[in-house]
Amino acid sequence: MTKFVELGLREAVLRAVEEGGYENMTPIQTQAIPNVLEGKDLIAVAQTGTGKTAAFSLPIIQMLLKGEGKRQAKVARSLILAPTRELAVQIAENIRAYAKYVHLRIALVYGGASAKPQIKSMMPGVDILIATPGRLLDLTNQRHIDLGQVEYLVLDEADRMLDMGFIRDIRKIIAYLPKKRQTLMFSATMPTSVEKLAASILYKPFRIDVAPEATTAEKVDQHVLMVPKSRKRDLLAHMLKDEAVKRVLVFTRTKHGANRVSKHLDRLGVASGAIHGNKSQNARQKALNEFRSGAIRALVATDVAARGIDVDGVTHVINFDLPNEPESYVHRIGRTARAGESGVSLSFCDHEERAYLRDIEKIIRQKIPLMTDHPYHAEGMASRPHAAEKEDASSRGNSRRRSNSGQHKPNQPKPGNSQRRRRPARQRSR
Ligand code: AMP
Image 1 (tube, rainbow, N blue to C red):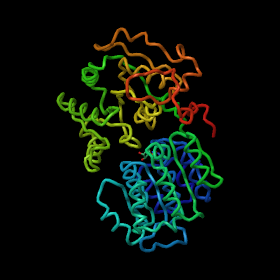
Image 2: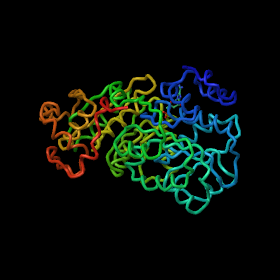
Image 3: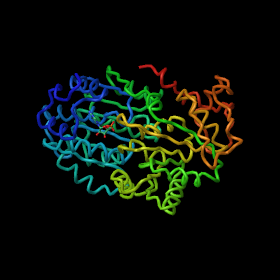
C-alpha cells in the first residue's frame, strides 16, 4: 500500500491530504498508518522530515471521527506530547490542515505564554490536545482539563523530552490517563532511557525504524573547516558570500553565541534571526516564519530551540560551534537535504573542538572531508588526528558527551557515562 487513497480514510480527510499536495505515502506512513488504524501501539525511530506527523495524526483523526467517545466539557479525547513549543505549534498546524473539513476541536497548550486563553480553549472539551509536558501537567493538576478519558496518546521526540528532563512530568501525566488506551511513541534515537519508558507505557508495540541516523548523514554533503576560534566570524562572512548559500541554518552551542552571531550577520547585511530558549515565543515564531518565507536568509539557533524545526529548502547548515553531544550533529545536518533535495553542511572546528569532531565521526562512522580551500584555514590543524586511527576503541566509548570546558581528555572515563552510551545507528536493534 503506497497511496493515501488506499487507506480507507474519510473522504473529507483525504481531500485535505490531497490539497496538501500529497498522494503517495512516505515509508513511515506506509508502515504506521494501517497498524495504528488496527489499534496497535507503536514505537517508531523517525526524525522530523520523514512524514511522522501525518503518520500519527491521520489515523487518530480517522479513529476519533469513527469513535464512540463524544466531546465533553474540559475532557480531552486524545493527547499529543511534544518537547518544545515550536514542535507543538508545528504539529497543531499540520493537524489543523488535515482536519480542516471535519469537526474536531484542537487545542494547543505550552509554557512561556499566558495560560488563560489555553484554559479557555479547553473548556468546551478537546478532541486533539497538543501540549508540552510542563504546562499540561500544571493545567491538569489545576483541573482545567481531565485526561481520564484519553483514548490516544502520542509522545513525539521522546528522546528529546527525556534529554530536556521531562521524564517526571511525563510519568505524572500518564498517571492521569486511563490504562486502556492506544499509545504511539516517536523518537529520533533510541537510547536505553527511551526503551525503558517505551517498555513501561506501550503494550506489545509494533516497531518501525525508518530513519537510521547514518542515512541522514549520508545524504548531506558534509565538510569540516579548521579555523582558529577568533576567525570563525570572518569565515562565516566569507562562506555567506557564496550565493548558493540561499537558506542557511547556523548552529551555536549557547544562547549568547546565537545572539552574537545573529548581530554579526545583521552588521554584514545578511538578514537573520535567532531562536533560543531566552527568546519569547512570539519572537521565536516570528523568526521561524520569516525564515520559512525567505524574508531572512539565515536563522541562528541553539540545538534545543531548533529541534523539530520543519523548514523546506534549507540549502546549508553551518555548525558555527561543534555540538558537545555527537547526536546533535546528526539532528543539525538533518535539517538540510530533506525530501530528496541536496544539502551541504559546513562545520567550523577550532583547536579545542577537535575532540567533539572525533566523537561525531565515530557515531556517523565516516570521516568528514576537510575543506582547506578558505582564507582562514588553520594550517597546523590540517593533519588532525582521526578517531579511528588514534583512539583505542574501548576508550572512545567513554567520551560520548563532553563538557563545554574546552579541557578535552577523551581517554578519561567519566562516572555514569556508560549509561549514556548508545549503540551506533547501524547496529541499533529494532
Ligand atoms: P514531519 O516528519 O511530520 O515533520 O514531516 C516533514 C515534512 O514532510 C512536512 O513538511 C510535511 O508536510 C511533509 N510530508 C508529510 N507527508 C508527506 C508525503 N506523504 N509526501 C510528501 N511530503 C510529506
